[in-house]
Length: 294
Image (cartoon, rainbow, N blue to C red; front, side, top):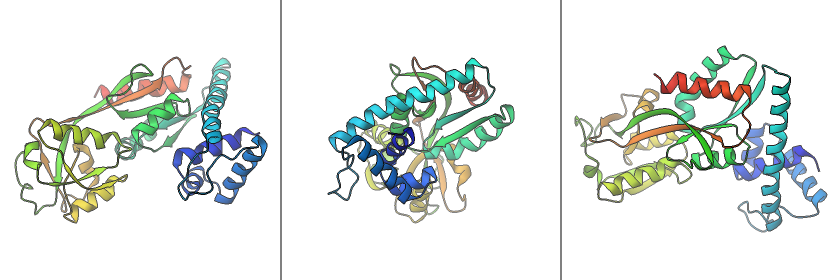
Protein backbone atom coordinates (compact mmCIF):
# COMPACT_ATOMS: atom_id res chain seq x y z
CA UNK A 1 0.00 0.00 0.00
CA UNK A 2 1.41 3.39 -1.04
CA UNK A 3 0.59 6.78 0.41
CA UNK A 4 -0.18 8.21 -3.02
CA UNK A 5 -2.89 5.59 -3.54
CA UNK A 6 -4.48 6.59 -0.23
CA UNK A 7 -4.23 10.24 -1.22
CA UNK A 8 -5.89 9.64 -4.59
CA UNK A 9 -8.64 7.62 -2.89
CA UNK A 10 -9.35 10.52 -0.53
CA UNK A 11 -9.43 12.97 -3.44
CA UNK A 12 -12.08 10.85 -5.18
CA UNK A 13 -14.19 10.75 -2.00
CA UNK A 14 -13.77 14.46 -1.24
CA UNK A 15 -14.66 15.59 -4.77
CA UNK A 16 -17.44 13.04 -5.11
CA UNK A 17 -16.37 11.64 -8.48
CA UNK A 18 -13.41 10.23 -10.37
CA UNK A 19 -13.78 12.93 -13.03
CA UNK A 20 -13.65 15.90 -10.63
CA UNK A 21 -10.81 14.32 -8.65
CA UNK A 22 -8.79 13.76 -11.84
CA UNK A 23 -9.27 17.37 -12.93
CA UNK A 24 -8.30 18.80 -9.56
CA UNK A 25 -5.29 16.53 -9.02
CA UNK A 26 -4.04 17.00 -12.60
CA UNK A 27 -3.79 13.30 -13.37
CA UNK A 28 -5.64 11.24 -15.95
CA UNK A 29 -8.80 9.40 -14.95
CA UNK A 30 -7.38 6.01 -16.06
CA UNK A 31 -4.33 6.58 -13.80
CA UNK A 32 -6.64 7.50 -10.91
CA UNK A 33 -8.83 4.41 -11.48
CA UNK A 34 -5.75 2.20 -11.67
CA UNK A 35 -4.48 3.61 -8.37
CA UNK A 36 -7.82 2.93 -6.64
CA UNK A 37 -7.90 -0.61 -8.04
CA UNK A 38 -4.37 -1.21 -6.78
CA UNK A 39 -5.37 0.00 -3.31
CA UNK A 40 -8.35 -2.36 -3.32
CA UNK A 41 -6.09 -5.24 -4.34
CA UNK A 42 -3.53 -4.40 -1.65
CA UNK A 43 -6.22 -4.25 1.02
CA UNK A 44 -8.30 -7.09 -0.43
CA UNK A 45 -11.54 -5.08 -0.19
CA UNK A 46 -13.88 -3.12 -2.45
CA UNK A 47 -13.92 0.57 -1.57
CA UNK A 48 -16.87 1.70 -3.70
CA UNK A 49 -20.25 0.21 -4.52
CA UNK A 50 -20.01 -0.78 -8.18
CA UNK A 51 -23.76 -1.33 -8.58
CA UNK A 52 -24.78 2.33 -8.27
CA UNK A 53 -24.24 5.25 -10.64
CA UNK A 54 -23.63 7.59 -7.73
CA UNK A 55 -20.31 7.27 -5.91
CA UNK A 56 -21.04 5.36 -2.68
CA UNK A 57 -18.48 4.04 -0.20
CA UNK A 58 -18.70 0.47 1.06
CA UNK A 59 -18.36 -0.12 4.81
CA UNK A 60 -14.71 -1.03 4.13
CA UNK A 61 -14.33 2.18 2.12
CA UNK A 62 -15.66 4.26 5.01
CA UNK A 63 -13.19 2.61 7.37
CA UNK A 64 -10.26 3.11 4.97
CA UNK A 65 -11.21 6.77 4.47
CA UNK A 66 -11.31 7.39 8.22
CA UNK A 67 -7.91 5.79 8.78
CA UNK A 68 -6.41 7.42 5.68
CA UNK A 69 -7.20 10.88 7.06
CA UNK A 70 -5.23 10.03 10.19
CA UNK A 71 -2.32 8.50 8.27
CA UNK A 72 -1.96 11.36 5.78
CA UNK A 73 -2.55 13.99 8.46
CA UNK A 74 0.28 12.52 10.54
CA UNK A 75 2.53 12.32 7.46
CA UNK A 76 1.90 15.97 6.57
CA UNK A 77 2.59 17.05 10.14
CA UNK A 78 5.83 15.03 10.20
CA UNK A 79 7.12 16.92 7.15
CA UNK A 80 6.18 20.21 8.79
CA UNK A 81 7.94 19.35 12.04
CA UNK A 82 11.11 18.29 10.21
CA UNK A 83 11.13 21.44 8.08
CA UNK A 84 10.81 23.63 11.13
CA UNK A 85 13.44 21.62 12.99
CA UNK A 86 16.07 22.68 10.47
CA UNK A 87 14.42 26.10 10.15
CA UNK A 88 13.67 25.95 6.44
CA UNK A 89 12.05 29.21 5.26
CA UNK A 90 9.95 27.22 2.80
CA UNK A 91 6.76 25.24 2.80
CA UNK A 92 3.49 24.42 1.14
CA UNK A 93 0.25 25.55 2.76
CA UNK A 94 -3.09 24.07 1.79
CA UNK A 95 -5.68 26.81 2.21
CA UNK A 96 -9.35 25.88 1.95
CA UNK A 97 -11.70 28.59 0.70
CA UNK A 98 -15.31 28.37 -0.54
CA UNK A 99 -15.53 29.55 -4.19
CA UNK A 100 -17.18 32.93 -3.53
CA UNK A 101 -14.61 33.82 -0.87
CA UNK A 102 -11.82 32.60 -3.14
CA UNK A 103 -13.05 34.78 -6.01
CA UNK A 104 -13.07 37.87 -3.82
CA UNK A 105 -9.93 37.44 -1.77
CA UNK A 106 -7.53 34.73 -2.95
CA UNK A 107 -5.89 36.76 -5.75
CA UNK A 108 -4.94 39.44 -3.22
CA UNK A 109 -3.77 36.84 -0.70
CA UNK A 110 -1.63 35.03 -3.28
CA UNK A 111 -0.09 38.22 -4.65
CA UNK A 112 0.72 40.05 -1.43
CA UNK A 113 1.65 37.04 0.72
CA UNK A 114 3.73 35.70 -2.18
CA UNK A 115 5.77 38.91 -2.25
CA UNK A 116 6.45 38.73 1.47
CA UNK A 117 7.19 34.98 1.55
CA UNK A 118 8.35 33.95 -1.90
CA UNK A 119 9.53 30.50 -0.78
CA UNK A 120 6.14 29.53 0.63
CA UNK A 121 3.62 28.15 -1.86
CA UNK A 122 -0.15 28.31 -1.39
CA UNK A 123 -2.32 25.44 -2.64
CA UNK A 124 -5.95 26.51 -3.03
CA UNK A 125 -8.68 23.98 -2.16
CA UNK A 126 -12.09 25.30 -3.30
CA UNK A 127 -15.04 23.56 -1.68
CA UNK A 128 -18.07 24.52 0.39
CA UNK A 129 -17.48 25.73 3.95
CA UNK A 130 -18.77 22.50 5.49
CA UNK A 131 -16.27 20.42 3.48
CA UNK A 132 -13.48 22.88 4.32
CA UNK A 133 -14.21 22.54 8.05
CA UNK A 134 -14.12 18.75 7.73
CA UNK A 135 -10.77 18.78 5.90
CA UNK A 136 -9.21 21.18 8.43
CA UNK A 137 -10.47 18.96 11.24
CA UNK A 138 -8.94 15.88 9.56
CA UNK A 139 -5.59 17.60 8.96
CA UNK A 140 -5.90 17.57 5.15
CA UNK A 141 -6.10 21.36 4.92
CA UNK A 142 -3.86 23.65 7.00
CA UNK A 143 -5.92 26.84 7.01
CA UNK A 144 -9.56 27.46 6.16
CA UNK A 145 -11.54 30.64 5.59
CA UNK A 146 -15.20 29.95 6.39
CA UNK A 147 -18.42 31.66 7.37
CA UNK A 148 -19.05 32.10 11.07
CA UNK A 149 -20.38 30.50 13.22
CA UNK A 150 -17.97 27.59 13.32
CA UNK A 151 -17.04 24.97 15.90
CA UNK A 152 -14.78 26.67 18.47
CA UNK A 153 -14.28 23.37 20.29
CA UNK A 154 -12.40 21.97 17.26
CA UNK A 155 -10.75 25.04 15.76
CA UNK A 156 -8.63 28.02 16.63
CA UNK A 157 -10.59 30.93 15.17
CA UNK A 158 -9.17 34.26 13.99
CA UNK A 159 -11.23 37.15 12.59
CA UNK A 160 -11.04 37.85 8.87
CA UNK A 161 -13.69 40.26 7.52
CA UNK A 162 -17.27 41.28 8.15
CA UNK A 163 -19.59 42.94 5.66
CA UNK A 164 -23.30 43.29 4.99
CA UNK A 165 -25.53 41.38 2.61
CA UNK A 166 -27.34 43.26 -0.14
CA UNK A 167 -30.21 42.46 -2.49
CA UNK A 168 -29.31 41.79 -6.14
CA UNK A 169 -32.00 42.11 -8.81
CA UNK A 170 -32.47 42.68 -12.52
CA UNK A 171 -32.53 46.44 -13.34
CA UNK A 172 -36.22 46.23 -14.33
CA UNK A 173 -37.28 44.56 -11.07
CA UNK A 174 -39.87 46.53 -9.07
CA UNK A 175 -37.42 46.96 -6.16
CA UNK A 176 -34.35 47.75 -8.27
CA UNK A 177 -34.42 51.51 -7.73
CA UNK A 178 -35.35 51.51 -4.04
CA UNK A 179 -32.96 53.27 -1.66
CA UNK A 180 -33.29 50.35 0.74
CA UNK A 181 -35.44 47.26 1.20
CA UNK A 182 -36.67 45.33 4.23
CA UNK A 183 -36.28 41.54 4.16
CA UNK A 184 -40.04 41.26 4.76
CA UNK A 185 -40.65 42.81 1.32
CA UNK A 186 -39.06 39.74 -0.31
CA UNK A 187 -41.63 37.26 1.00
CA UNK A 188 -43.16 36.67 -2.45
CA UNK A 189 -39.90 36.68 -4.40
CA UNK A 190 -38.20 33.66 -5.96
CA UNK A 191 -34.71 33.20 -4.49
CA UNK A 192 -31.57 31.91 -6.18
CA UNK A 193 -29.14 30.55 -3.59
CA UNK A 194 -25.96 28.61 -3.16
CA UNK A 195 -26.64 24.91 -2.64
CA UNK A 196 -26.75 23.21 0.76
CA UNK A 197 -23.01 22.48 0.78
CA UNK A 198 -22.45 26.19 1.35
CA UNK A 199 -22.95 28.00 4.64
CA UNK A 200 -24.67 30.90 2.84
CA UNK A 201 -27.60 28.61 1.97
CA UNK A 202 -28.74 28.08 5.55
CA UNK A 203 -27.66 31.57 6.62
CA UNK A 204 -29.99 33.29 4.15
CA UNK A 205 -32.89 30.93 4.91
CA UNK A 206 -32.45 31.60 8.64
CA UNK A 207 -32.41 35.37 8.11
CA UNK A 208 -35.60 35.20 6.05
CA UNK A 209 -37.28 33.06 8.70
CA UNK A 210 -36.23 35.59 11.34
CA UNK A 211 -38.05 38.17 9.19
CA UNK A 212 -41.21 36.05 9.30
CA UNK A 213 -41.19 33.98 6.13
CA UNK A 214 -39.53 30.97 4.51
CA UNK A 215 -38.02 31.93 1.15
CA UNK A 216 -39.27 30.33 -2.05
CA UNK A 217 -36.16 28.82 -3.62
CA UNK A 218 -36.31 28.74 -7.41
CA UNK A 219 -32.75 27.58 -8.15
CA UNK A 220 -29.61 26.57 -6.28
CA UNK A 221 -26.06 26.47 -7.62
CA UNK A 222 -22.48 26.00 -6.47
CA UNK A 223 -21.28 28.86 -8.72
CA UNK A 224 -21.74 32.53 -7.84
CA UNK A 225 -21.47 33.59 -11.49
CA UNK A 226 -24.31 31.23 -12.49
CA UNK A 227 -26.44 32.68 -9.69
CA UNK A 228 -25.73 36.11 -11.15
CA UNK A 229 -26.68 34.97 -14.66
CA UNK A 230 -30.00 33.60 -13.38
CA UNK A 231 -30.76 36.96 -11.75
CA UNK A 232 -29.90 38.72 -15.02
CA UNK A 233 -32.28 36.30 -16.79
CA UNK A 234 -35.02 37.56 -14.42
CA UNK A 235 -35.53 34.13 -12.84
CA UNK A 236 -35.29 35.42 -9.29
CA UNK A 237 -33.38 37.58 -6.80
CA UNK A 238 -30.48 36.79 -4.52
CA UNK A 239 -28.77 38.03 -1.38
CA UNK A 240 -24.99 38.24 -1.55
CA UNK A 241 -22.20 40.11 0.26
CA UNK A 242 -21.85 43.63 -1.16
CA UNK A 243 -18.25 43.21 -2.36
CA UNK A 244 -19.22 40.62 -4.99
CA UNK A 245 -20.76 43.52 -6.97
CA UNK A 246 -17.26 44.48 -8.12
CA UNK A 247 -17.15 41.22 -10.12
CA UNK A 248 -20.49 41.82 -11.88
CA UNK A 249 -21.64 43.74 -14.95
CA UNK A 250 -23.25 46.71 -13.22
CA UNK A 251 -25.36 47.53 -16.29
CA UNK A 252 -27.20 44.20 -16.03
CA UNK A 253 -27.77 43.84 -12.30
CA UNK A 254 -28.74 46.20 -9.47
CA UNK A 255 -27.52 46.15 -5.87
CA UNK A 256 -29.95 47.43 -3.23
CA UNK A 257 -29.10 47.98 0.46
CA UNK A 258 -31.12 46.11 3.09
CA UNK A 259 -32.51 47.74 6.20
CA UNK A 260 -30.92 46.05 9.24
CA UNK A 261 -28.90 43.84 6.87
CA UNK A 262 -27.66 40.38 7.80
CA UNK A 263 -23.89 40.30 8.21
CA UNK A 264 -21.44 38.04 6.42
CA UNK A 265 -18.73 37.27 8.98
CA UNK A 266 -15.71 35.34 7.75
CA UNK A 267 -13.16 33.74 10.05
CA UNK A 268 -9.88 31.90 9.61
CA UNK A 269 -9.75 28.44 11.18
CA UNK A 270 -6.94 26.05 12.04
CA UNK A 271 -7.18 22.78 13.92
CA UNK A 272 -6.72 22.93 17.67
CA UNK A 273 -3.74 21.03 19.13
CA UNK A 274 -2.11 20.71 15.69
CA UNK A 275 1.43 21.97 15.24
CA UNK A 276 1.58 25.20 13.23
CA UNK A 277 4.62 25.64 10.99
CA UNK A 278 6.49 28.92 10.58
CA UNK A 279 4.80 29.27 7.21
CA UNK A 280 1.27 28.78 8.61
CA UNK A 281 1.91 31.22 11.46
CA UNK A 282 3.15 33.78 8.93
CA UNK A 283 0.02 33.32 6.81
CA UNK A 284 -2.31 33.70 9.81
CA UNK A 285 -0.60 36.93 10.83
CA UNK A 286 -0.78 38.21 7.26
CA UNK A 287 -4.52 37.46 6.95
CA UNK A 288 -5.42 39.24 10.19
CA UNK A 289 -3.15 42.22 9.51
CA UNK A 290 -4.13 42.61 5.85
CA UNK A 291 -7.89 42.16 6.12
CA UNK A 292 -9.21 42.36 9.67
CA UNK A 293 -7.18 45.39 10.74
CA UNK A 294 -8.12 47.43 7.67
